[in-house]
Image (cartoon, rainbow over all chains, first blue to last red):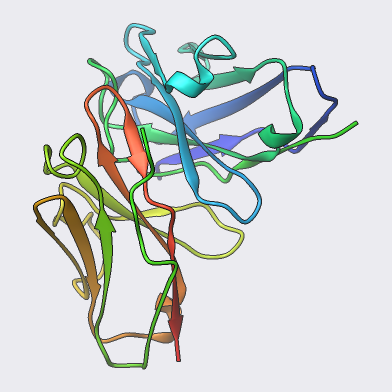
Length: 123
Length: 109
C-alpha cells in the first residue's frame, strides 16, 4: 500500500537546524511530488512548500523562503525538509504528503500523509 | 496569503446533516475549483476526503459531499455518525501557493 514513513521526534535549541525525512513506498516515487505541511500545538495546518521528485524544482511558501530547503533522494525514495535558524514558534508536527503535481508549483490535493514528526524547539 | 475562514466548531446529533463553510477570496477559492477537505482525528495525520471541490477519493463514504459558490466552499456530512467527530480543514489552490482554513471541530452530540 502507498505509505510515507517519517523520521522520529526531534528536540532542538533555538538557532539550530533540523532535517526531517519522509520515506515513500508502494508507488513510483518520481511520479508524484511531495508537499510539506506543519501544525503547531493546538493549531491549524500550514503549507510550507512543495518539491518535484521528477526534476527537483521547489516552491516554498513566502514565510519559509530562505530558511527551509526541500530535497529528495530518488535512489532511496526519500524526501527531506531542512529548517534552519529554529525559533520556539517552529515547535510543531511536520508532515509530508504525496502530491499529484510533478511539474509546475504543486497542488492542493495531498494523499496520503506521513505520520508526522514532532519538532520541539526549546532552550 | 491569509487563511481561509471556517467556523471554529459545529455540532449535530447522530443521523443529522451538518455543513461546514470555508470562505476565501477571489484569489483562491473564488478563482479555482481546486478545493480539498481533510479530516483529522486527534493525534493522527489528516486524511483527504474531498478534492476538486466535490470529488471523493476511493474509499471515502458518500455521506461526505462538497460544493462551492463564489468565494465559499462547503462540506456537508449527512447521516452523522459518532466516528465523524473530528477536526475538518479546507484547503485551496491559490496560484503559486496553497492556503488552509483554520479548522472546524465537529462534535457529534
